Amino acid sequence: MGIKANIINKTALFITAVLMFLNLYLIFIWAPNEINLGISQRIFYIHIPLAWLGMISMFILGITSIIYLFTNNTKWDNLAKSTAEIGVLFLSLLLLTGIVWSKPTWGIWWTWDAKLTTTLILWFIYVGYLALRAYGPPGSQGARYGAILALLGIIDTPLIYFATIWWRTHHPELNIGPAAESTNTIDMAILQVLMFSLITFTFLYIFLLIEKYKLTQIETKTKEIINA
Image 1: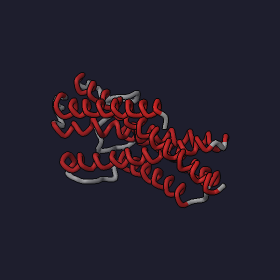
Image 2: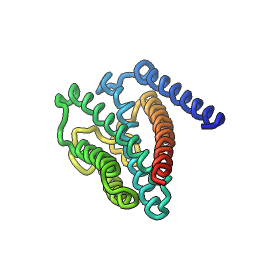
Image 3: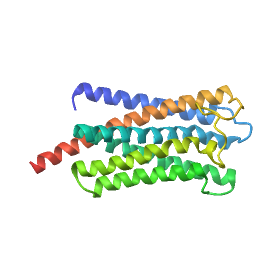
Image 4: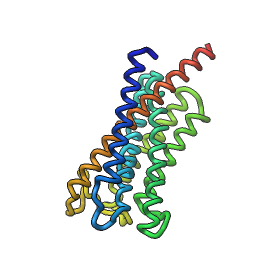
């Protein structure tokens, strides 16, 4: 890594760390308690960004996998594998924070709610993709099978978002986004913290993706040298 690249990398890490520190301050100190859910609502500032990025990562996985199939450029395949690893991390944390919240709120650790079930399916698609790429056919054949799994993930992703509209679920109505159902307006301070948290976690995702992509590129070049 050159000096310039090293400076950029450290600067990006510093900015991400500062944003995360500010985000935690806003979540646990500055943001007001929500009227109905109280202090337990604060986990949503982490839960929602994890959901957003877990789904966005699946779209990136699908798109990069398809581009690789058409171009046969390993850079796209490496990007696909990198975003899959970050995506499964975020989705795992999403499920974990959901379980932590549901026990005191709903009185249960888990229920086969439509939103939870479709999210769990997406998690299995991520895990299946990574297992296939690690232990399945090498090269373009493995990438082709992985792309099929990624397309299934893309189909599942909107089901997660619209689950509260299409099916009866334990989850509250959507009150943000294009398909918002609830007529209740969100407190401006709560909305501001949520938006800041979305931006912060997006920065974190991008930083992790870039770093993972660099490592995957190095691994690919190393294998090419060994097999030459």
